[in-house]
Length: 447
Ligand code: PA5
Image 1 (cartoon, rainbow, N blue to C red):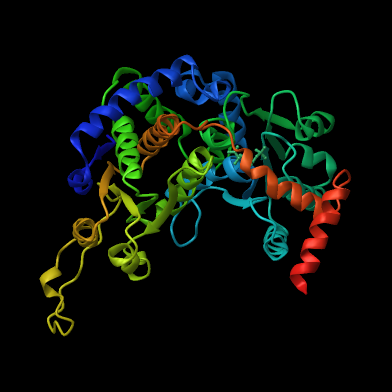
Image 2 (cartoon, rainbow, N blue to C red; image 1 turned 60 degrees about the vertical axis):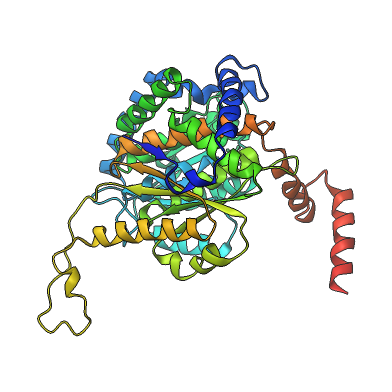
């Protein structure tokens, strides 16, 4: 069971402030259910673990089962919310050295950036391999995935022919509108739906995440079950004993004391992409109107030897949320060495994970002593159920937290400007005036 504890953040909290935040959380929580605050058209994620389209889930599972026998790789094309959820959960179950889940088709990702060298490597890697494509875009118009799809589709059609390619391309997009929907209908591709009322970064529990994860052999029903358990808890518990409430209250209390940076800390590199998912969830939801907590992440103990110095002694502007997994999936004992030249025999017979645990506890206290409040989020193990719980825990907390900060946690107007500039500079019709303006500025900079 997921557990959230203030641990080393408790001394930094003022009691009356928590009571005040609890009262504000009541209002925020109500709005997540009755739609009485900003972004009410995008609250579909709140009931998703119970309201999921069962017929679509059955189709996903059937197709995934078939594909698992037919392909070596599934190329998942998407960016932002149409990519990070699947990558986060997949990485948690992948073997660290290969980046893939054992005995399953590989998941390869594309469309999440624009590097030509990456694309060429991918095209080369796919040559002669049996692969399928899952192109994911809610709007159906995002440049990065659209361009990548064009390139990868062309390779697939060249390798297996247009007819066979049709049965190996799956599009996850809006039910009715957008270029990808139109294109898929014309070509006869199997489509899955991104529900209208679920914004990109909240879609991991829709076909956006579930289809690629099912192809990779991850138990998506268990993922939904875990999320449902947290949904039930959030529906029933309307006070600070609800971990999402406690987390939202803590981070906002610290933010109001001037701590503008939150670092999500893990001690298991399989969770690095989970941190990337979390960064998007919180960054896009809260960073607006010159407000918001900047989400950062570290992976320890690796980063204790890089960012550790700053966290211990640098500018005091941050707090940490430490993510700890209680049970490892395997045992790794430190051997005895009769010579003991390295002086490590005091560790003989101990689990490596026990050393990791002590490193986590010691670091958390050291950072608190250095003025960095830190709380502890624990899950039992890296299992689908636990990750489902953690996904919902964070989604619910960011909804509450955004409302506490008087922003709409479900829009992202700020991501448009880079797109306009990019379109203008690459010569998209309709952006001629902007192109002239930008080229003049670039010329000035070059002088
Ligand atoms: O959270 C969001 O809404 C964004 O990150 C989008 O998911 C991202 O921009 C991709 O958009 P789309 O799915 O429309 O291609």
